[in-house]
Image 1 (tube, protein in one colour):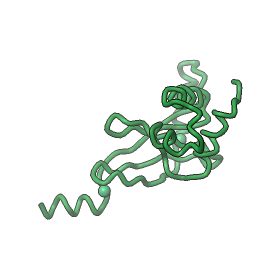
Image 2 (image 1 turned 135 degrees about the vertical axis):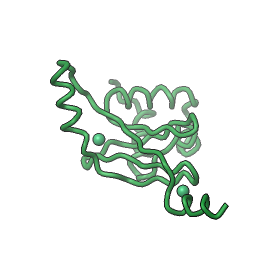
Image 3 (image 1 turned 90 degrees about the horizontal axis):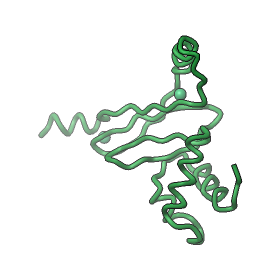
Length: 126
Ligand SMILES: [Zn+2]
Ligand SMILES: [Zn+2]
């Protein structure tokens, strides 16, 4: 992959925050608008395919985040869209399945959806 300065600035932006960001958010936050939105999308697709970033999708919008050394996943509240980090225990499970099918894993992705304690409470009160 050619690491253009445009791509570098996207990765820089994502590595500065733990908060997953949508392509639109990244586009808005890029320092000088040298890139159009479709370039941002294309770069994110490339990063995702190479396992550099992961994504979680909520209401048809994908939120991207860097795959860090301490790989983790997110739980997302469907009520208030708050995101919680969670540890990953998928590696062994995925590897077992992969071995069975002679599948070569590059990376994996998982998001857990539901309602946080606050939103559960609100639903009860309604
Ligand atoms: Zn919530
Ligand atoms: Zn994982």
